Length: 481
Image 1 (tube, one colour):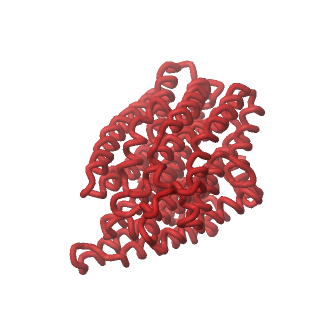
Image 2 (cartoon, rainbow, N blue to C red):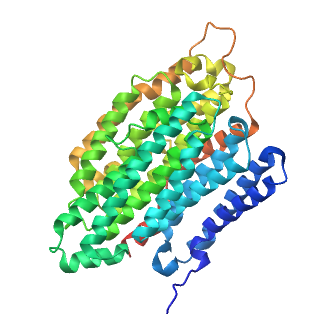
Image 3 (cartoon, rainbow, N blue to C red):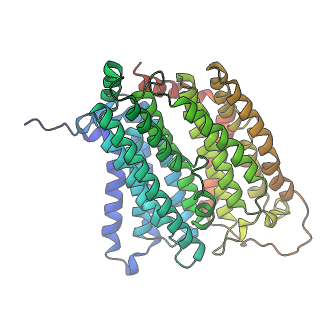
């Protein structure tokens, strides 16, 4: 009997995260009530170690577990965005949530599942990654047990997540039933050799898989959980899931649709394009009437997911590359915005209401300027990173003949200017109130997070070539070039 080659290098970052979580749980046995700020620092060290090995793995494609896991440039690029979001979860979590082994382990396990989802090239491994990322997030959403909104967020996320997982698994079953294969490359080969045997199964399977991942990407009409979950979850958890989940779901969707299901045979492009347009228009329109900063950023995230899926709908190397750039850009912009929210929020989330930001520039100029930069970047104002990110997606849509997709991007961006600029104007408007609604000081880690994300937003906006070159290798990895 031949046993599959495991090859630990193919999952080295995941091994580091898992080992760190085990060490944290072991140390907690000797701490009162399993609590301790040092455990959050241990989580930080584990994530930084995982980030440190990514350049080493970049030199060579590693295949493990009998071909079920591939650590290629595409997976490593998505892993970088996921690990940055996990890093923010630990930095911001030192004040926002009660630190301890359970928080550290849950964040690390969720990040591990996200990374498995982006590198899995076999149906069972893909579903395993999806579940490993989902289960810890359900608990993290309700981590603030003293708040009713946090409990409500956990329950809604659990119910909607379980429903979407069932749909996704059903879609995978249809794909296996149509081809008899579990490897993505084998599914494509089976389709190309004998695609007329079960064409209906293929179409149904592709549709259900797309719908299942649409829940994770928060595409309309599968977005209902997002505003309540983002608002109710602790802000560090919201920042983590808003970026990490999108990166993982984007990676899985690209692999499944590009590698396993050729667009010329399985007609998923119209569905993906329709969901993208519906999502970016609805997300921007719904964000116009929000008065809560976290809910506004939630609907903004829905709209940003629409832009991201336009890159997939382009069905080209240019589109995949543009989508990958936008994932990284979104990580810096969005985590930065949530870092400012966390810095201005006490235990009762005082910084959540947009009206409370009035006059912020005269009280906390550093945070006001930083939030301005992040919001303008999300609005795609040059020379910030959001501008080249959206420009690359727009170019990919036009190059593929998707003129309507390009028009939708322009319209959505114009709508978004209103709700992104509204907080900016408030922050630089004098307030008649003498007392600030915000805590007197913010934890130093919140300022560090804001500074790192601000640097990324500015540098990659001015010099996008620093990222486009390496991402070209990642695109080649997907298309086997």
